[in-house]
Length: 304
View 1 (cartoon, rainbow, N blue to C red):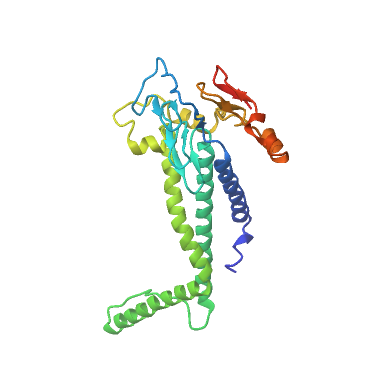
View 2: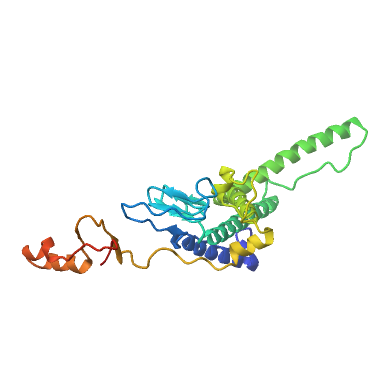
């Protein structure tokens, strides 16, 4: 029966494995730090990097939003409002930026879901072909006739032409019957066919930029048009770096409340979680800012 395509163990277990890998790599790509460059909350502009190219697509550039000089190949993401190292693009489907630390997981996600949609499309096509073959046994939808022979007589020519016409109609009728008998399979196959086409194209594009050691942002902007890419170390080595190299450590602090940057010109009132809990649990005089420690650190940092 065309319904029991899952009887094929290879197709069934491949679909299960690809579904699990798709969901896994999707969540990893969404939850992993893409390579965020922490912003500096200070009224003072950071020092200019020494002995480093400034400006242009391959130099350090100052980000007024994050108050940092971001390194080459980095970019400020307007959706996440952060600077990302080796910025590739912001993916709305993943809900995260794709950068230095999660690009390999994003590529494996694309590879998994593209393979899954291809398997589903092929399975739907196989079901429809089996339903088409089974329709030959249904009364009124007999086997397709063919013009096996042709003679020189006029009557024979007309007979073959008549037979060919009814053969063509019979094929359409059987195909139409197969589609009407399984509308869900037809809709699923058409949807996954479109998805497979777009996802396979996107997977091939990312395979191309990995081979060239580029990012989507650099490729779209034409950064290396007429300029040698210093990061390109050959196709095989580029793939090894992209998939097998050790990921760089996250630059984000483990606890964002550890340091508070203060203005040295005036006293600053620093509230931490214990002070807030104490202030809400006591009377009004105890919750005034005078009960909270003040700092005027010469270094500009006050521990919380």
